[in-house]
Amino acid sequence: MNPHIVAIFGGAVSGAEASHQLSQRGIRCVVFDQNMLPYGKIEDGLPKWHAKLRDKEEANIDEKLSDPHVTFVPLAKLGKVIDFQDVANNWGFSAVFLATGAWRDRPLGIEGIDDYVGKGLYYQNPFMHWYNHYHEPNYGGQQLALADGALVIGGGLASIDICKALMMEKVQATLAQRGIQTHMFDLERGIGKVLETHGLALADLGLRGCTLVYRRRVKDMPLFPGETDTPDKLAKAESVREKVLLNAQSKFLFNVLPCHVPVDKIVEDGRLAGLVLRETMVEDGKVTEVPGSDKPFRAPLVISSIGSVPEPLPGVPMKGGIYEVVGGQCCRLRGFENVFAVGNAVTGRGNIKESVEHGKNISQSIAEGYLANPDGTVSQQFRQREDVVSASVEALAERISHMKPPSEAQRALIAQRVKSLQDNAGYSGDYRAWADAKRPVRLEKLLGLEAHA
Ligand SMILES: Cc1cc2nc3c(=O)[nH]c(=O)nc-3n(C[C@H](O)[C@H](O)[C@H](O)COP(=O)(O)OP(=O)(O)OC[C@H]3O[C@@H](n4cnc5c(N)ncnc54)[C@H](O)[C@@H]3O)c2cc1C
Image (cartoon, rainbow, N blue to C red; front, side, top):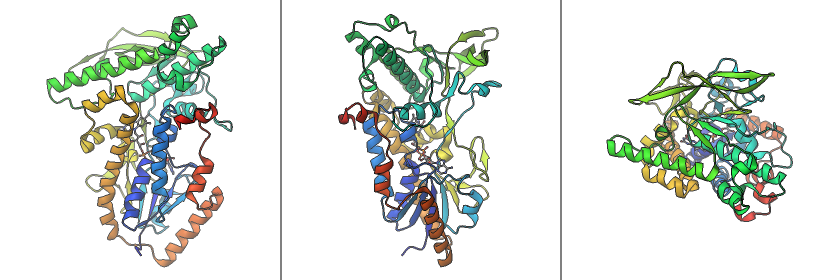
């Protein structure tokens, strides 16, 4: 039997793929996740209208974590339930992988604005968590109050998802006030189409819609970059980006304000009441702010969607917002011989670039594919993430074979600690039974639309 045991923190796309690569080589792993379920961004970041894709991706993770070489430990947050230095130095694991993703929203960067979180301001990660789960009968998280005329700060696909969610929620609620019942899966075909069937337009509902604010031009939006190294490719990429945005706008009726950055907050009665926006100019790829162009934009709600970075973990060195790894050494964490970061935990916001470099298959054709098949395009991102992890774990597996495996006493100690954590979580050790029991109630089920599942 292979004497090595690897600890993996985070059981989503990256952690599950790492466990799969190791278990295929006969190496046992213990996968710890902070949540009850190990699905990460698939469950809490991928908007719930991607129901089929979500179920497929989660089944993919279930398959990998059900391998007999894999032991799962839920509700085991590194940095809270488990101390990082302790697990890295004392538990005796052959190696420790950090596959904890990127869950901290980049700060909006306006002094004092975070005092208004929940009072007119939300960040993307908590917003999407609420959006994906608030329909669950036993949802116990924070409730968000939406309002028409929100400002969404962003520019990437995630910010378009926020606009789409906001528009669908407001239109659904306003139609309901008029006695017209509809639901997300219906509206997702296109808000305009649904309104048309009732002989209505957005303005008839008294709605102005939310506005996406982006610091560059529409044609610069990071909506799948594609190759841009020749004038022809750049022109093609720019036209694809414009098409992607126009398509989303025509379906979901939100507004776009390019070439503006937020520079100050507007506060009234202890709430954020809008932002001061400054115009920008883009020249030779550089953004410059236009002096004297500041204008107040009142909005009952601001949502910041400007990217996510890894959460700091006590004892884990960080540099530039991501875990500090030693170059060319399989993402080994600086200062630790046996700790490695994989997936979004190490690549953070640079993951698009890395995916492009690695997979070589985010191309204009994929970007165009997004217009026709958004699920397929997002799924491509998951495959690319797996490819990146798979390649690095392949190299790491060889390295691990030269590392010191845990002694018999350490193996017994690991087993004892793992059992105690599983007991505390109420986890019996049967992964499939646990995942089936803890999977949230799905909106499609509540609506009686099982075909979406
Ligand atoms: C809206 C959206 C936008 C996306 N944008 C991109 C993109 O820009 N580039 C790209 O490559 N891919 C993107 N993707 C694809 C995809 O999200 C990621 O590539 C992939 O899901 C990352 O997987 P991961 O396992 O690294 O991280 P995650 O899915 O974030 O999983 C991390 C896991 O670690 C767990 N965890 C976190 N902290 C701890 C802790 N302290 N202790 C224990 N467990 C912990 C979490 O609970 C979670 O299960 C996007 C997906 C969505 C839905």
